[in-house]
Length: 123
Image (tube, rainbow, N blue to C red):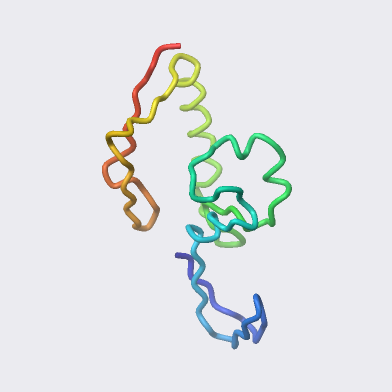
């Protein structure tokens, strides 16, 4: 959850928010909104292959928050993930191990409780 405070009286999504009200935002729910994501409950990385990022509203996907309080490490995290995945994917294909289901552990960040089990298959 991300907490924000209304600075002035405003109206959004059909709700009146008085100045000073704390608003809680759930990226988990926003990222599964069927208005923006087809079959939102399924893990489908290929959904990003086209122009989805340009078609959805600015904060329909915000894995690092947004605005002036965005995570300071977001660019490093993305760069690190791309570098690691490109090196691994060059030599291996990852196969998810269905016998080890992913159980979520919500904390400061959302993570898999017992990790994500995958088999490395040489290319």
